[in-house]
Image 1 (cartoon, rainbow, N blue to C red):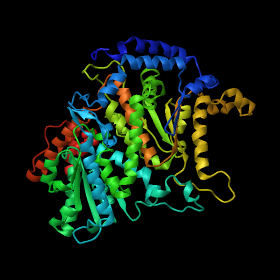
Image 2 (cartoon, rainbow, N blue to C red):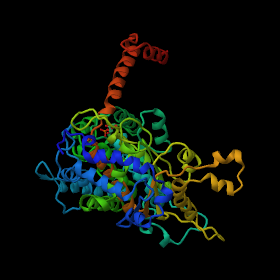
Image 3 (spheres, protein in one colour):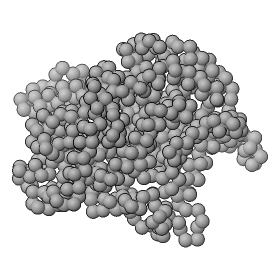
Image 4 (cartoon, helix red, strand yellow):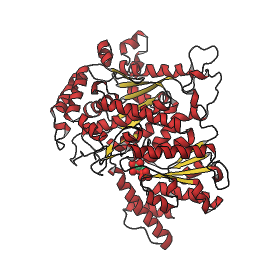
Length: 581
Ligand code: F6P
């Protein structure tokens, strides 16, 4: 397909449009009776199991989606990404986050140069530096070991690392012996237990002074290392927060202390030096790493290694790399990220469901949704950052206005908490395709005396029950048989036929967390490649930034020179004047 041809003009797209009518005549209640169909819709890879038999789709739908992938030249586009071509054409950049987790001996070219040795040079530097901090051989200005870290960054320079930190922190950070804890061999990773003992990692993102106050509360500058994380080193929020923390350190320990207490992660080492951080204490990454795909660069690897030690983080990188290989080389009908991407397209562009719920049945994954949200669209800042910044686009990569919707509104909460808030809407209100994510082995199993079912079993009972409740629903006939009073029948009826898919992970160790991250990253790329949009730029966030800068100038002029507010509409002028009062 020529790149200027819209995917919606191709025959496979038209065939899928027509196919919607066939699917609208089916009900998941019946589709799930077909065991052969269910078998086809299960994929296993490297300990993971994907079951998409509860999608409103048949085997024929799948065939048609595979044809769509072919029409979109999906394989070629994936190859071009792995080959380091500048597929982010509006920013003239390659998209090579897969190189960040490639093994030391891999060869991944960008502009004729193998980038893997550069990646490993930085990883080696992180390992050495994090070990020196953790062992106490690098000390602060007053000779004390640095046991606490504040990572300052926003968007992609924050949400990915926060997700991984939150996923690791219970077992690796502060394992609590709850009642009667299962024996250590039952734990996800006993060898890494307590790797973060006595250490704290905080993330400062919001420019709101309340976020600053919360993050430094209880921290002593003498024992704190600040890591300023910014690809550009120009992001207004991050630079203001970095200046605030520099002041926090120097006002307490003297300006010379900054050299011992502040380091940076950036692609812009000139600005790092200008800020006052020694470039020797800066950890580089590259233009070909998109902000929201940067968790596997020093952006995530440095703060996480400081907290958990480099070996734990290396396992996370290996898990992501395993999915990269799977994504690159597995035929599409068994390729987990490709299937997830194609099914999302089916739900959004054909069945017309604009939202998607990400529902991990693991509290450790509570920040998965906030991270993936960015990766898909720039329009909303709810929960799944990666997907909403990437795929919330209205034009094709060639600048043609699209006649169809792209991107999903991603949101989510860990089960079972979500069940007690928004699941009502999912069961009886809007149809929202759900991604259920379950873990076979808890990070922290608890067996109460006298109870056979563990706390984790209780959680997972819900993970298994919810998809069927959505798929089957509850028929009025059934309610009548149960003697439900007539006036309550409609209230208690569930239409069912609500799509979901289930992803079962063997456990939640650093490796599995890496797998999960890479699955979602690649799913977003698949959607973008098929829709024919650029998932790797984010022009949608620019307008707000430049308007904020105009407001900032006005505030400055009003405060310093008493100038009246001008150049804004009546509404903004009134609000600003009121604020300045
Ligand atoms: O939200 C827009 C964005 O450009 C993201 O893509 C990026 O991750 C974030 O801002 C922060 O940018 P930087 O790392 O350059 O500070």
